Length: 114
Image (tube, rainbow, N blue to C red; front, side, top):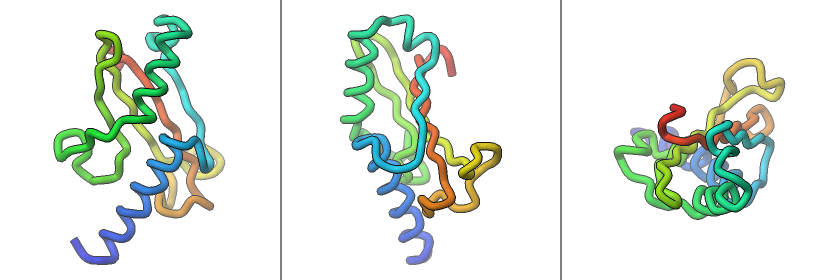
């Protein structure tokens, strides 16, 4: 991977972490019906676990963008995924490394909803 590609990936990763961990940047968070059905206390615990997730590896993060995670919370297998859209949220982002043209959509779901 070229230095330019590495820098591009590092920028995407930093923006994903900034959004997932701190809620900063343009984006939205969606909780599936399965997550919502677990109740308010479980939702809070899941949101905290997603925020604190650091177990990225080659299996769950092959592009090194920190855009996917799989974790267990209170006996539930939970996935999160960040997708990149343009500002109108109608098509893919032209450049996920550019926060001016990207809307990040974080979806949190039960593994069996994937």
